[in-house]
Image 1 (tube, one colour):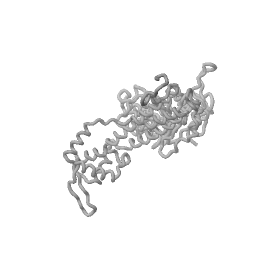
Image 2: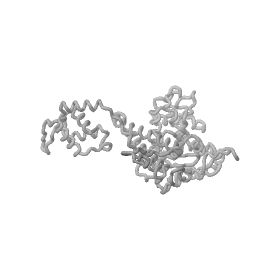
Image 3: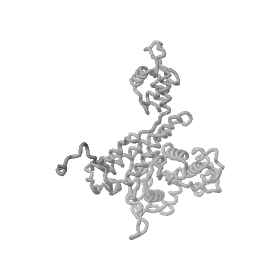
Image 4: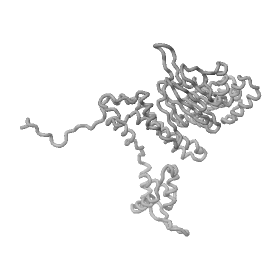
Length: 197
Length: 261
């Protein structure tokens, strides 16, 4: 789970308390507008990780306000973090909602697939426009990390738009082919037929 | 009223059986301070639209209105004056004169219009500085990068303070970084300097800089979308109408039932 490993990574930098961790996470994840992490999630994550020995409470700070528990990474936590860095991080592209909509429109006839493509294209362009604006406003002098994240989003949207154009061009062809259907496999014991007697 | 508007703009090349309808009753507009992108497959009528808007060609039917005036009502002389003074052109291959430096290239429209040479060069220098080429004033095109050459071309297009700027694949000959810079500059031309800008592009990344995208196919507008935040999502009825017009609303073939929406 990503938040867990990000917390480990941040504690590998230096010990921190929960509030600080949340702010640091949002900063490295591209800002709170990009990844809004709930405080409760930070504290439950820390509690769970403390139980499994990945982090430990190092000190309690109290400067007038409520007490702050400072957490540090343990050797087990460092091991876990190293394993995470060594793992693959393939993006999720198997579960695509638009693809499902398109297939169901084709199968059910309940929506016009061309219309779905039009609406989707407009939405993707609006999103790309918003990201382009953010990217234009970002200062390349000290916001390169943010720009890289925006570029990644923009490039993915461009690819989605290209795929949409290609799909639109091949829609009539798709419609002439049999649509995806489950394979009909006999289940259980083969039925007895009168001939078997 | 928008600055530029077309009414049933139609262009047919050839006659009789060999006639090709390049543009078929197109109604669109561009306003001052607006950056509009035109997209579509090759042969969809993008270039024809640009030529008609720029007064480089005359329509078979319909009209182009610029600032309340119909281009068809203008004489050839008046049209060429409008082209020189009120419309700026930007091309894919920059169309700079190889033996002239940046200042002389940018000053050309005023020089051709008979302006005082010193004043024309001063104004060209001013615009070159504004598009970020202050340090390259006396370089010839072959001493400039592709992106810098396009900046010279943009300064040249803006020199006469045109109402309308037409850009034909302005980033088509640039690497992606220079393309982004030029698209950003065209955005600035519309947003900060208040010109109406229409650019033809096939690159989604470049089109995304625009306020609005017009999609052309077979000479008709098949889709038009506002990109600015807060704009209404496309009215379903409008989409339906365009789909019907472009023949994509017909019942499906084979096992498909017609969409019941």
